Every structure is written in structure tokens, then in C-alpha cells.
Image (cartoon, rainbow, N blue to C red):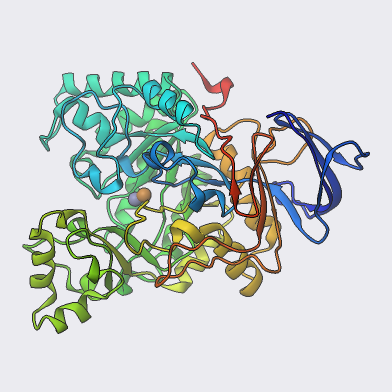
Length: 490
Ligand code: ZN
Ligand code: CU
């Protein structure tokens, strides 16, 4: 387990955004020993012409179950990803004290297993020994359904107190913050006051509040206001998850959201966001489809990612499928959802504009997070396998949208700072060695919408906790549970 490795003659990007430095980097045990000129006596890795950077942090993953059931996590590790944050969009595997799973959480792969306490989940993660490090948020839907069961209603005063104490013990167990999914059941019924009261527990502990806001389309601006107001009341860092302006009539609204972020920050609200580098989103079909008021514009730009009852539909646009079946799209969707297992259908929705996406990616406070849903049976959104290489290959190399050191900062140092992950995210002597060696001239996400389960090319070595975790496609598992900054514990 204990290794003495040297990456010889690499271009080091330390994660802070500083320009590259030509050096050798040695690792002894789990830590970076030296950055500079390293003598012989180590296992040598020739790094000429390649970049060595901190391992990438996926700040918005839905790998909650995957870290237990698919611990190789090839789809993450092969991208250069060494840590994932789980528990996003209000949903996680813990804490869950009630009999009922939260809302339709099964759609995020979190139906089972589930754990009464965060510490039970984290010890299961430790036993599973996943290939990447894991930090967890506390899902607001978990708090709601632990206290209210399957009922979707406002909690009483006593129930709110019960949710607060459940959250407090989850944070005590090592969760790094609170997440909400205000578009989904049951989180959507929460009021701003209820949310601020919970988020205040994060504020007191210097932890983060992340939010899939109430609308990412027509009501985007009021939804951003709500997030800012929660940050102001709760005095906590606020992270808008997978920030976007969805639906053609909303394109351009990131100009306004960015102006609001700047104004709020000037008034002391620490608000920022993360983004994935694609103009399509993905999620459960059932959440996008209200039979009483079907959103025809959305159905128009949707295709099937995975569909347990009808796998032959995977990869096809709904409009084409409905035309072939000689029916309209809402009727066709109703048929899918009515079939056994149909409620587990995932779709991909082409709803965003390039300008908003590029504006988001180049924003100085943006972080990179995949939002990948672990769905290896159908044709998942290519973000699951391709997020980080797409930023590096397409947006840095091909488009020149952002400089390489800046892109790396948004995947490493800035991510660890924001989520309170200590001793990682930077290449410096004494830091824990989570590292990626890659070729900036060739790095490419081979995953595409039509062929989404391909690992990238150009990512040569990945080191996790000082151990060689990925090299020439071979995987060895060295991930750990990550907690918040020790100084932040109360
Ligand atoms: Zn979300
Ligand atoms: Cu998400």
C-alpha cells in the first residue's frame, strides 16, 4: 500500500490557477513529499509533455449507491476524478429513519440500501472501499420523509424541530452540508423559512447549503432570489447546483443571474454555483411530465435515456417515437409511464443554450460537477463518463473558452475550499496525494449521446490517497470517506 512514486519531468498545475511549473513530484505513503527536483530511488513515471494536477472533484454527483454497489467507479476514476460529493438534489441514502423512502428517490438510484444515520452510511462506504473519496451532503428530502413519512405537507413546529435535530446529528456524523431539491417531491413543498431554519445549522458550522432551485426555467430569477435570501438568513455558503437557463425563451437569463450573484456577494452572501459542460439535462421522465398540464416544449426536445419496460426506445427522441406510433407525445409518454417499471424511465432534455453554458463555465465562481445519474443499463447522459475531459478537451483546447490552469482550479482547489475538504485539491508538499496525469493535447471524452458509456482518452494515471488507482485502464481502489474541515466541527 505504501508507495514511493515520482512523476518525472511533469508540468505541474497546482490547482490554484497558477501557471504551470516544470518539476518532478514525489509521493511517499499518502502524501506529496516533494515538488521540485527529486533524486532517484522511487518508482518512476515518465511525465514528459504531460500535466500533473490535483485529482478532480465531482461536487455534484449522484453516486450515493454506486460507491457501495459499483465500487470501481470506472466512469468517474477514468475521468481523473478522485473525489465525489453525494447526497445532492435533496436525496441521499442517509439519514432515513422512517419506513418510507423519500418521494421518488428511487429514480436517483437511492431506493436501497438505506441507513438510519449518516455515520452508518459512511461506515458502509469505508467497508466497500470505493475507488474514489466520498463526501456526503444531507438531503432535505431525507429529513422530510424521516419525519413525515410519505405525506407531502408542511411540517408542524415539533416536526421542524425533529428535522433540525436529525440534521444536527447528520452533520455531527461528518456530512459536509445540506442539499435541497425544490423541484422534486417532497422538497418542493418547503417554504423559504423552513429551509433557512435548516440551513442555519450549516451556517453555524461553516458548512455549505447546496440547492437544486425551485425553477431552472420560467421562474429562474425568483428561484435565485430565494437561494440568496436563504443564504442571507442562514449565514451560510450557498451553492446553486447545475446552474442553467432552461427552455429557449429563458436563454440569456444567466446575464441576470450573474448580476444578482455579484450584488449578493457584495452584500456578504457567499453564493456561487456549479455547472456541467453540456446543453442537455437529464432526469426522471415522470418529474418532467404533468399529465394535467404537459409541457409540450420540453417533451419536444426530450429523448429516452433508459426505459426499463421498453429498452428498444432508448436513445430515441419522443417526438419521433410518438410519430411512429401514430399518436401525440403526451399520449405516448402516458403509455410509457403506465407500464410496469415505466416510472423509472430517465430522459435527456436538450433545453439549454450554448451562450448561457459558456457564460457559466467561464464565471470565476463556477465549479464543475457532473450531475451524472448512474444508469448503466440504457443510454445515460454522456456527462456520467465525460464531464471533466469535455471541459479540458472541448472548452479549454478546442474553444479556448478558459485557460487550462483556471479550468483545473474549478475542478480541484476551488472545489475543496468551497466544500470544506481539507488537505486536498492542491499540489504542494505535505498535501494528500490525489493526482491526475494527462495529455492536454489529446484528452477527449469519447462518450457521446449515442455512445455514452465510453471512458475518455488522454487520462493516463490517477493517484488516490498516494496509491496508483488507475493506469492503462487497470483500477485499484483506494478511496476514503471525507469529512468537513476539522476546524469547522462544533
Ligand atoms: Zn438536481
Ligand atoms: Cu443533481
